[in-house]
Image: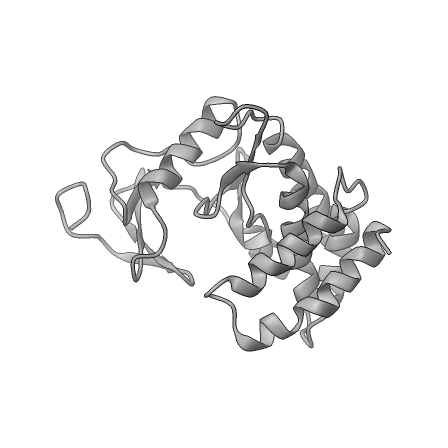
Length: 224
């Protein structure tokens, strides 16, 4: 049972680790599957960055480790907008870069750190009437911004080096994202590759692309 005391409503979305249910016109319930993550901790991060003006859904108190009750937003993901022809690939990369810079202006909860999303890519950005909103904060932590840039870059690069129809647009997004790499380092990129390889939601094929993906990021960012 969710923290609202009633059964989830209509299923309106599913991802690799969670399902989203309709509660009413204002709120949705995001329920983790298979003990994935800590929804209460995720909600706390979202409220922290929102208090500093960062664009995230509102979170309603009363969630739990598995259930996160958050604001219901209307709009396509950045990926859906690109697929529909409503968003240019280069513009998408520019928006991602802007969201990373804005996030890294938020002080971390540990002295001398910044808040990192660590999974900021086109499927985790909703384009609402009020602008982009960033979702899925399960991997967020405090740390150095270079790692956030590295993870966003290597996620795009994995698509760019795959045999997919969106490979070339993903390259364009990557180039746009890294037009100003904002402190991306070789060390951060190596750590991003390690974390992606250890991610249990990754397929064997996706993991196998990481070496070539890292080389592409190095080339685009001038880290060769």
